[in-house]
Image: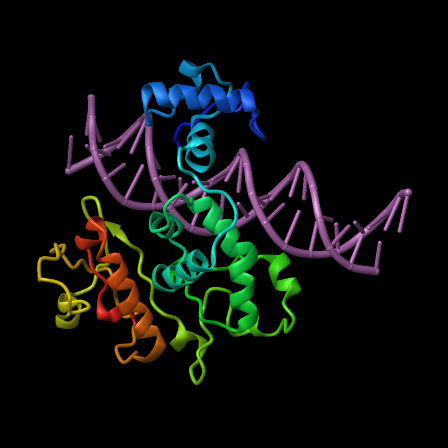
Length: 252
DNA sequence: AAATCCAGCAACCGCCGCTAG
DNA sequence: ACTAGCGGCGGTTGCTGGATT
């Protein structure tokens, strides 16, 4: 409230970008670097909102961006990361070089989400995010059309459990000076990680009172889900950023 | 061949956290 | 300590082209 709009509505062009605009923006960012997006339109001579410039650059103009043809490996990784992280598209994208959060989000909503939904689960999202926006098109094309009442898109419909029980708690991540961590107590198992660590993981030291009794947080776990977590932890530990953080056992 | 439906994608919107002043 | 501004993120919308009727 009271916050200034990110850019004036009037005089700002909207809609699809032209190749000319792309060219201007790309050359500007190459010359001046990223950041100060609010100033970019003025300085570059674009009649666009700064946010729009940023989005265009990040999702389309940035070097090394890959478009389309998401491989099976990438798809598998997206599914696994989504299991672990929920709808944290930027984090998922961070593990997929050349892919953008927007592309992954779109891919999920249009393809993987539907697959998962029709398959009856195996997908996790953040309860706090309240995945209330099951893509209507997707759900409409789902053959069963019945599972959504008990297992909305994004929640696993684990056999033998209620949807609530099956809901894996994917906590809201908070920043950790360049990394990500989940505000949960570090358990001994988490400290040892996958066993190949040398104990040098840079844990953040302040388990904040984030998790209260509300989060579905089963400690038993095991099985495929735990395998996924271990595999992901192993994968992610190859990343220096990730070394600063950890995924605790209580995720399961 | 025309109309309609649907999937995919680009872009917008609004909220939130961080940080500089 | 407080506040305003900025950047970033996730959800949503709307357009477009291909598929189907």
